[in-house]
Length: 446
Image (cartoon, rainbow, N blue to C red; front, side, top):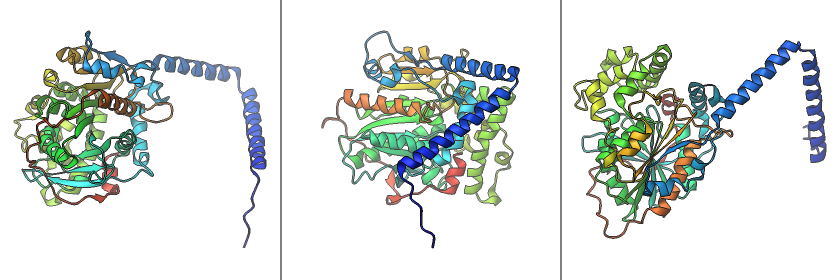
């Protein structure tokens, strides 16, 4: 049997240095043989790219009320919101490229991360959702609960969702992902109501269950991504959960006006292609959960998200059509009812949500509705739910964790006079077990 040869560290470094020098010499020799026009073109391209990057690297634009406020006292202590956001090079060219790059990394972003504990919850109408805890709440001595509300086609089995859970856990929060009906760890649909923007209607009962489980000093910190952010906004406007039990919230890349957001997805060839691509994971999830004998042909033929909403969502949730569905779940003019500090993160180059100057819900109009509690931070680049920095980590995740950490220090603790939760109608359906990502979940989340 051959023996392994051990090379001293100094000798190994010397070998690597010689190899690097030879490679550098060959590259230099090749460069000398290039035509001057080619060298000039490469240099010009590099200079143009450097200029684009310099223009993209900016501090986020903060929109706050003019007077001192609770949300201002929190935001002004967040270092990431006061510093320059140095984006990943892919973000410089266009938001779509940054988003696609983030999507290709999703199946591998959670490699090596601890799998969460899963608790399935039965709702009053027979539906099932799941709480995917980063650590078992029965064993953890933490009362600040950070809940991640994922976007369309994402769940606790999505890589970047797990990366956010890990960051929240490292910051001292009891981190948990809420898996919507029929998504991720929730398992197959157990009612005729699939996941939709109406999901905010389930949250009060589920959070009552969380408060009853964690204890009377429980405080909630909610992070919504994309459609999860829109659901979060509607929930904040409608919830009966009091402050400071509901301590703070943040949304990332959330649609602000549903009808406008849907119209932008159907305008232009590129957007239509992107809209169709977004329906594919939805169709896959539908095909995996439905008896082939009961397939609705409208779903399989759908070329847009609106088509699927019309076929699957409007009827079970009680909406006459897609426009009525959008109106019922649009909270863009209801932020005056938000009762906790709320940070809205967006990127101007978002390739899914329209944040252009024609947007009917600009930052200033959102903040003006509730300057005491609502703040907006908008970056020049970042794509949709991407916001990768130079190291490939999520800048938006870092901001959310900082915002929650500062809010936890500013928001008063829950005292004994806080109203107790109602007897929750959401009840545990299965014991907590360690759950590994399923192939189905990873495919749907891609």
